[in-house]
Length: 219
Ligand code: DX5
Ligand code: ZN
Image (cartoon, rainbow, N blue to C red; front, side, top):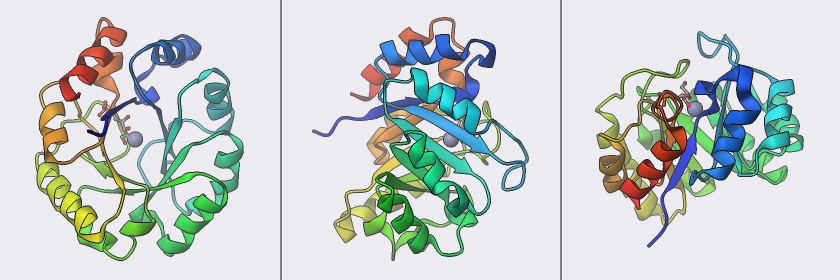
């Protein structure tokens, strides 16, 4: 049985206590640190840039799962590799030459991820799925934490899982946005492998315990 993963999103951390929150994730049962980069162009919000990622990398002991919500992500592939990124995810909607971008990410020694907006059909990955290590399925419109989960995500996860099996690919399915204890198990049952959780973890009174409970619920 393959193990299912939890990736707390640092976007929901207390930025004035970032080291404390990263160390909480280090010591918790979480598997990855999810790092959201927003440029104010691809999405209507700006999160943080390289100096902050560098500070995160200094304290993080688990793999860095970097989600780029930026236009023309090819410009920064090398930089994110140098910052210690394990998986670099670009948006399908932001890449004119997706296949080339995926090869460039892998050439830098990282795993290559592709994120899909809620309106983007999974069939668009038919010709690249064997080159993709992770699909980040957006279950909210990207740009902000704390939004409500879009129910159609279940249909998309099932269809994507079918495609992955049909093509004999080893791609992981990650769900990003509005994940909580209500939908976690159903998402795993639909075919998900990795759950990103921002507000559900960091807004809870005991984030370590919340991560543990979430992890156990999908084991
Ligand atoms: C949204 C980001 C998410 C966000 C998830 O654009 O990609 O990673 O931090 O936050 P929650 O879990 O609060 O929806
Ligand atoms: Zn994200």
